Length: 156
Ligand SMILES: [Zn+2]
Figure 1 (cartoon, rainbow, N blue to C red):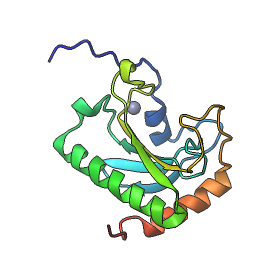
Figure 2 (figure 1 turned 60 degrees about the vertical axis):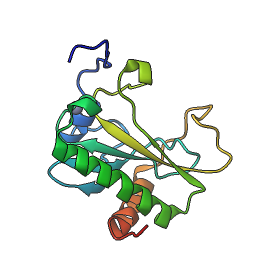
Figure 3 (figure 1 turned 90 degrees about the vertical axis):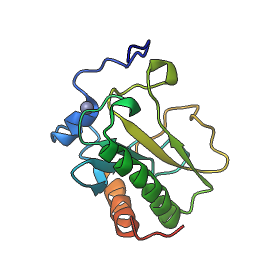
Figure 4 (figure 1 turned 120 degrees about the horizontal axis):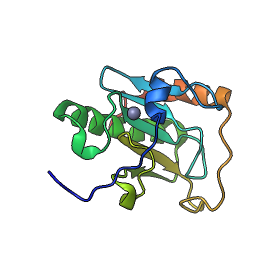
């Protein structure tokens, strides 16, 4: 398929770097779930006015939703639902926002397929007006442990 789609150019890919064990200054990822196809971890930057901003990411370097395999698509969809449920159980937010961007025109900034699952506090503006404070690594790891324990055991 030939399209006008423009994917952001970013080398090295930050999500492939994390998987390769090369982390940014804010430390290793606080992993919530991990299998052969996908992984789920906490984004250090909360976007919804509270901690818990999670990223559901393919292990393979897949640029957009159009490049995912059937297996990856199933794994991603299931993980997004389970992540939202775990966040609700552990954090009891006022709402949960799921966001996913394909192409520069749709605000994609990392050229590696990912879903944001963002617990949202009622009165926090979205997107935040100022850059949010990074959640410190020990706090993020504690939260990831709680989410991991509740992940997949939730019911609708
Ligand atoms: Zn990548």
